[in-house]
Image 1 (tube, rainbow, N blue to C red):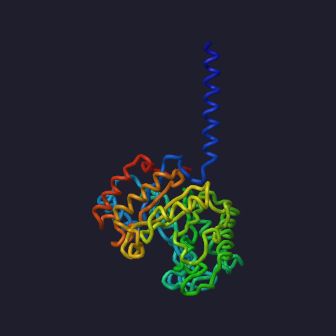
Image 2 (image 1 turned 30 degrees about the vertical axis):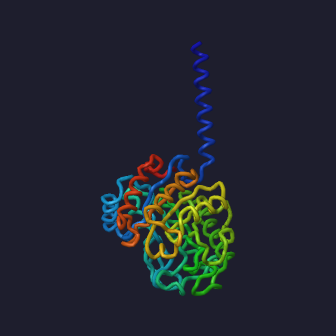
Image 3 (image 1 turned 45 degrees about the horizontal axis):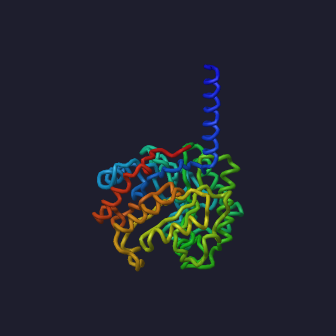
Length: 343
């Protein structure tokens, strides 16, 4: 009898382990199990540890003590003509100045107990018309730049989310077809080729600690559909969307879920602000917008990460007491209690 019970226990344990393994296999890279949703924030001041610490303290004191899993920040390939690499470098092949930022920013995230969620954009911030073109990427001209990031990310070791040239469906970034300053500068085909080129280069180098996030804005103001920019399932680990109050959350998020089934979804940045709200003729209040956002998240198990855009006074949750109270109430749900990114 004892032998029979022991055998049954072993079989049950084996079946349980098999089921767990199968469940693990169905998850995307760094995707938490159903019922969990990473909680993060996009804070200004991420360029220094001290400023990030202070802004994070303000967030926790004024918004919520709910643990943060993700730290959402921005890295542009160039700013004012200066390359923004992962490491500091003495010189670049084109003779332009260089500034290593990726390593220090990522270390800041890790020191504060969060996983980096990097918006890595192919443009020259502050001087977008001088951004390098997407067509040049696939020629290998900038391999030195990507290889420096590959080396740095690989050495970092811990999980990193990269949303590569986000909000490409809009008309405000130079890598978008339909960019308002030069609509024909890049095409959707150029974007797809660029996206695939970078992911393939990371893969060939054996980088395993990156989850690739293909992230749209939601309004398609550039004139092209989402599918035109989609590089294919093999190049995308997570889908992303940045909902702002120019439209209501349900209008933006549910079409993405329907168009691209099967992938986990994250909200890397989003929020309410007067400069966005003025375009929304269906807007009723900041409080209602926040509640609708949480309603959409909680009714769709595929949405497994979101970060509020606490980036300047216009976007601060505390700018509207009712909005803040709604957020504080809804973030207490058990789903948002996950504290660490799954490896």
